[in-house]
Length: 436
Image (cartoon, rainbow, N blue to C red; front, top):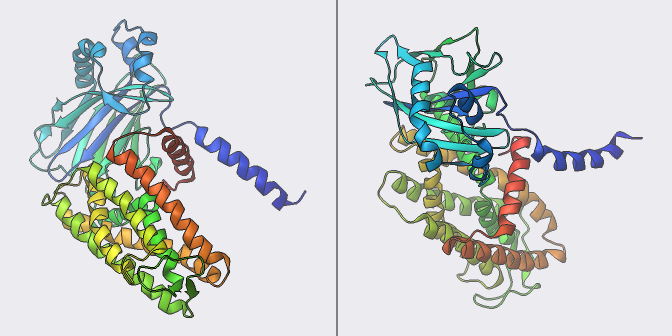
């Protein structure tokens, strides 16, 4: 059997099996997360509720709680049924986790609203905290950690940097352990066990350059996973390798196009359009991130979906002569507000904002250019085929249908099942492939 004969079965196996591999959390593990900001340190101590139930003799019937945990794989507020036990849990964490620094001495943990995290490998309680006695972030922090070590001989505790801009770690989202900019092994900086209960976290090796590079990566990454932004670019790309025969306002039939002759001219034209898009979203991204404008995300995301429909409709019936530039710029303003929500989710408000905005915008532009470089040559090769006008027409129709599907979902805040099923499955695939 030849190697190439094995490729298809292997690809099918990988596509089916990859989404169902275990996530990073495993039994007999706890985690302490650190979020290092400009002038403060926050974080979370994450412990499996089964371990807490045993260590503190809480007497919880975990089967009765399963319905709460089964509501979804995400973080949610601590349910009322667990709140009577939370003071004991908080006291346990305070006793078994001690943090200090040579500069300031002891940093008491000031606990804030607790949460739970339900994932495939277990159900965890989050004791969220903010460190006290910090006027500036210390260069080094001494951590003493012995959570569960006295009751479980194989228990380990993982020190995880969840956010540190200057280290290039941008506010890791946890639904399992993964990062937007680094992989799991880079996030875990130390592992405690029964024989290793002390660790000094060194923050001196970080720089603004690392943060800037991470923001470039975040911007590029956001374009790659932002299907609505990609489809908007596709709507602009489809007519870039052809020119209209008909006058403005006339319906574009499948025969209403003629191919361009110059690859260079067509490529520069689409680059100009995308650059206008970048300039526009950079303006509103900056204004929104700095707090000068603030529109409802429901409205912004709905308008972004509308932008896809209008750009696609322009391919069928021209709205404005050579109007791609105007469409890209006007709707780029709304895409920028959508990008701003990403920075808000990452906890970047007022933190190295100039470098963050610059790096993010460069990353978005880089991602857009890469997408163009992948798609444009294919379109250029197809432009003279009899199939291409049909591709523009029916491809634009498909984009309009998808766009109005999203408009309906976003405007009325309805979660339709088809979108969720595809999104969740594809997200797992991309996670395992290292793309997401």
